[in-house]
Structures are given as C-alpha cells and as structure tokens.
Length: 215
Image (cartoon, rainbow, N blue to C red):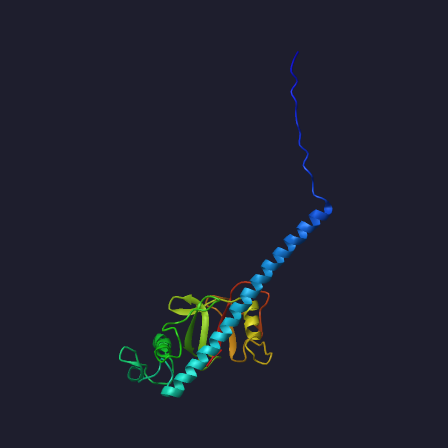
C-alpha cells in the first residue's frame, strides 16, 4: 500500500481594515514629524545667519569705539594688537587685500572668536566687502558659497532668502533691494533668478542668491 504524503498548510491571520488604518495613520504621523523636524532645523539655521550678522555688526562697532578705525583697515593694528598683526592702509575702505585682516583684527581685539572668515550654518562663508555692486555703496557682510578666493557663489534659494529677510526685523519690508539685508544673484546666475522686479523670484527652487548685510 502506497504511503500518501500529508501536506500541512498554515493559515496566517490577515490584518483587518481597522488595523491597516491604524498602521497607515502611525506611518503618516512619523513622516509628518520627520518633515516638521527638517523645517525646524532649516528655520534655526536661517535664524542663525541673522544672529551672525548682528554679532558681526556689534563687533565692528566695539572695535571702532575702542581704536577709532575699521578692523582690517586699521593702520595702527600692529600697535594696538601686537607685532604679528597685519595693519591696514587706513584709507577708510576695507580693500580686498584687507579682508583677511578684518577678521584677524576682530579676533585679536577680543570681539570675535574666529581669526579667519567664519562659515555659516547654511553653508558658505562670510566676508567683509566694499561696494559689492554699483547699487550697493559702503561696506557689507557678504554670505555666499566659496568661489575661489571670493564668496560670491549662489547659496540660498529665493524662499530661504525671503524667510531670512522676514526674520531680520525690518518692519515687514520684504523688498530684497531695500533695508539692511539684501540679496543679489550669485556668480554665474542669470539676472532675475534671485531678484525679479524688486521681489524674490519664488518660482525658482535652486540656490541662486547670495546675502548682503550692511554695517
């Protein structure tokens, strides 16, 4: 008599619709929390840029009140701060060759922690520049992506720029061509990609802007 094989099958219990709904709800809540967390992180990074500008401005004011000259341009910096410090030419303008000395003077005077051009939490680096464009006379802190020896590479999207502008406490003025915080296209970016008709071009999602803060 032939032996018959016995086949055993195991029935696995399925999920009910209620259980599936609960699983999907939990997954949605987790995904929402992740995206919300990313938004909070970016918000904190952008706010830190505003804080950096305020900190740098205060450092410049303190230096000028103490020594009577602009950091970087101070022709007597080696007398004030030590023989290892490079003095400026004292012409009242932070020239390109004085940009490194600008941060060193602020550091050696005890007004800033960094002796070199600081980086931001948004990426890129800060530099002190004089008249970055014909429409922007005077001295400005510039924040952009490093581009050789300059920091004029595009760093922020227009949406990030608008959020930064809104947190700069300028009376609700979001015009990127007015106020103490302004934006222009980074090097190699087509005109109008960051600023178009005195408004930030929110249709563009890629980094096209650099930031300028007057001091």
